[in-house]
Amino acid sequence: MLVQWLHLGRVIFGELAPEEAITATIEFVRIADMYGVTGMEALMAERIKGIIMAQRAVKNVFVDGHLNTRCLTAQHIVSAALLPKGHPVRSMLASAAVAGFLQEDKHKFAKEAEDVPDFAVDLLREVKTALKSLTTGKQGTTFKDPITGQMLLLY
Image 1 (spheres, one colour):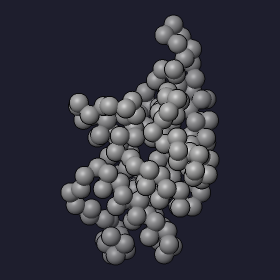
Image 2 (tube, helix red, strand yellow):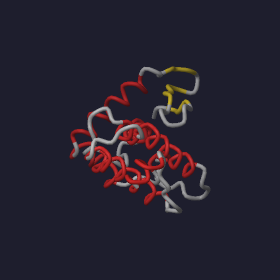
Image 3 (spheres, one colour):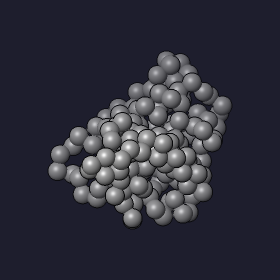
């Protein structure tokens, strides 16, 4: 993939399941970072966001209340935390976890938030941004989901 990027300026991932596509994307940006190759970070973060959004649209799969993290795994969080601070892919995964963190007592990545300090810092940064969007109305308090831009109810 890195050779494709260097020669073509794009990467062809092929057909992959959503979890595998995110894994391939994270590993691609990690190896690019190791070799000091830049220029694709924001594009790969948007690719992950696109996968997340596509999975949100899948019907009859909603089980755990975490629409944005349905196709994310603990290994994705751990691998992305190895990227440099401020990397768009790190920020994207933290953004995906914000809604679950704010709406659920036992959110999907609670263990990772405790065990992976860099992820916890990224998550807090994204939560702080989401909290700036708080509004209170007749239905209750809402915040802006950083992935979809929708206002969600704060439980």
